[in-house]
Image (cartoon, rainbow, N blue to C red):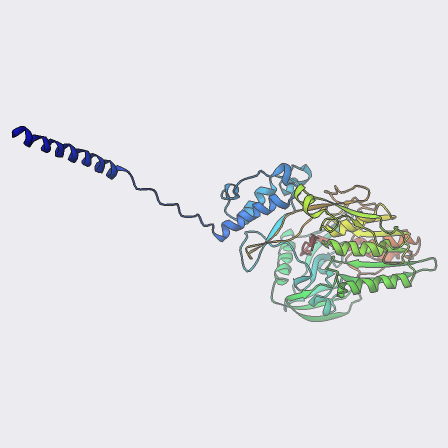
Length: 499
């Protein structure tokens, strides 16, 4: 009986122990980890990521210079703003010693602008089609051998200043009621210098600040001694890029003059196209044999506008269907945009005027850039071109852009293509070299005046003796009158744009 009683008790003990063992094991197994929350990138992070993505996709330097990351954040999270990401990418492009002041690399051109109030920690660079301000550009110039004052060197077409009748060479005698706008100078055979350099700097700053204000009350003095007053309001305006056109008629030939401040959009018979067509119709009707194209203040614009004007200038001198320009771009853009209907397909000349020019003169400065340089470069293989420059060369921007909008906050313009003319020349990184260098931009005469030094240089070459050789009095005046310290304000960059 004892034994019979002990057997079932032992079985129950074993069962309980085994059950306890399994329960204990189950209890000690950890619960599964929850799925990680997806990482949500902020708008700022997405913008930085997109700067990397589109630069890698579009930049002409991306193949050998920009490393590939599976996630853009692997690169962009090292930087705290869109501009620092872009600067880092530009810094990876090939080294170029001549650009030491721009970081010593080729890409000094790609840029971003903030949209809708977004802060990119950088200054906006591009103005096309419309501009803001007064359209008034001022330098400091000598009145005589003792005094300098503000002088207008350029008035942009369509601007408040243009509509108010202000002209190049007008001198500013008062701004917003203040009349103390002269600086004492000393002049000798080597030139003119301010008696007090700080006084000149302060004067320039006062003028620059006034040009940023909401309104301008100006008193001005014309070169003929007449005075006048104007009131200008700061505002946005549509640019009229043709700021002067004229035909100079001589017994031996007629010479055209075409002053262009930028290459604004030309399409569907818009105002710009009508203006260009009308100018060249005048040149055709007057049977000009030479053309002077003034690009000294032209910082660029739309590629298609430059192509349109190139065809007008080429006229019958360049056979129809001759190659004008070829695009250089990266492998991705070659694959997707270089076909027959691609954005970067080859461009050929099309005869759209009856001009048969003997020679084309280009008046340029070191601000002449982008589409302006392209116009000169595509004509050089086919036409007799002479470059007359204030220095020794143009700006040097053989690359172009198209816009990429990011998060409705950033307008991104990576340098995406380079333009090559029919002779295979594309590398004008240091600008196009002048045939006649160091010609003075004499700002004390109105635009189109045949005694203005740059225009006179071209006319004298086109028709020797035609300028009637400026009198000794005028020559003496030009020697003693000069710009002092460079421009107070300059035109915004236009770029080389595909639309």
